[in-house]
Length: 229
Image (cartoon, rainbow, N blue to C red; front, side, top):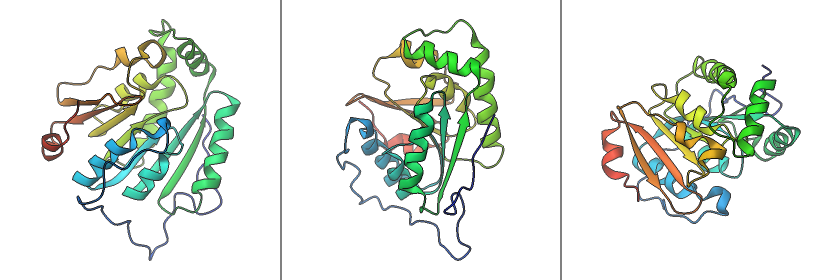
């Protein structure tokens, strides 16, 4: 695996005298309109941020929505899983946009052959994938990241199509898990494979492309006030 960390611009570093970003107040506007269908998950993430401070967030898949996370979370680790050259180009594009945000840590991971093939199968609508060998690489990525710090929330909107597998690997490791593009497309993203432990509750929003949360039962206050469709 290949990782790029702490690139120019103090990425992933915070000045010693710099305070954490302010915790948003509940009076903030959680229903602000998304700028495009690619960010129609943003209003639902804002609901969470208005109800619960999020000190640290793990994001799979950089993009326009990264700004929402950076504006509301004390620390954001954004991981781009590069299965095709376009994924690396997109990572470089996002570096130019967010490189001066002191609470941001970007990571680029070059996918191995099994994961690249699994992405190709998912893109063609081939889930469930018979050869599950690619999951070991995803698990190693998750283990390495979570071995360095803990996260309050994980958001899965990866450029690769193996999103259901990522969600499964985050259970019992992150209390709040969110994913985008969850309206259908099971054969493309593997949503049918998601198997939450009994301690997790699903909260689903079907507007737009679909946003789904899996929230640990210990988050009682959040579950009591975050109402899905």
